[in-house]
Image 1 (tube, rainbow, N blue to C red):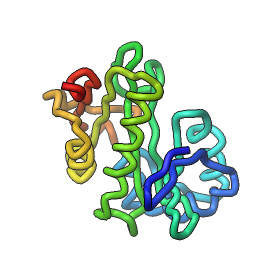
Image 2: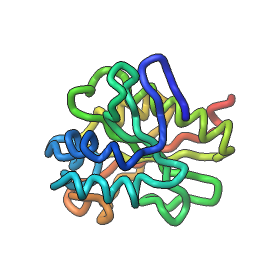
Image 3: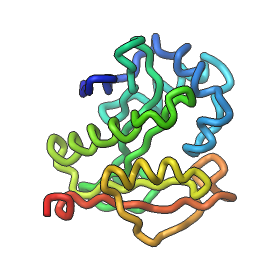
Length: 177
């Protein structure tokens, strides 16, 4: 578990399914991140059991309410939508609409970057964002990610065959200098 003054990054629990559905069913949230809105609490529970399980995906739990309001995590080689190398990872995140523009994603991403570089000893973090979701790109930039110049379509993402993504990169060695 990781934490800041405002939130915890903690494993997802099956008991989070209702809260997840409440926010993940919003049609303005998932499509911006590349996944379809959830259609039921049961679907949200299945997502928790399959996609959000494991040791590199966390609920963003607001300390004030104890409720998960988003998700952050990383994917390794073979899981990523980006062609990454060994000891590299792809970062991803989303936050519920009522919490947009409050700095939570930036704060959570900085916390996860520190964990990836200093605890997991990952060399490079990659990420991408739909060009029609520039707020996500600004979060990455605030955390030190740089544009790679690569823009592409990603069929693995919901809406990804019609909407291009911009690929970003954060190299641990460059960050140290």
